[in-house]
Image (cartoon, rainbow, N blue to C red; front, side, top):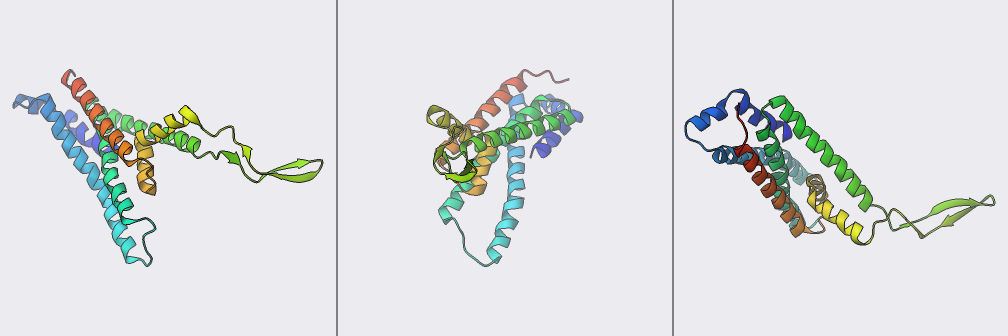
Length: 213
């Protein structure tokens, strides 16, 4: 998606078609939203290109679903919010950068940063409250200690913040949907929609004042 969005929108700048659209009476908001619709549809088609063959092949194999059908449907619906949210960020970056190569690199940097953030948040939330079967040696004898408190375990406000970030960051949202382990579906959907709205409004505002060379 970041490559598709950046290269697709970069052609408008490299070929000068954005200026042509404005010369025939299209407003900047119309141009931005038209590109937004096309890129969102393109990203969703990329997801379907992976999900549909995987689902069909999976149905042909023996066995049954591990998760209940409604959980799978819920994850699929929430995936749409995730795609719309993160693609809106790519669109904002690409519409504000006139160099196609630079916008592609910038979008990939966004992905890398989001992956690092996801690793940090997931790792922190995965810490167990206590250490189990912890082995130590006392006077040459092996001692197994169970229930030792884990100082890295998050509690209170800090854990609530990390849980919110787990629902807010796009890569964390995608991981929850992929694993079909969604603790708070409503908050995840609202966060995905909020990211899409915020990045689109920011992109529209900045693009309307951008100097198109």
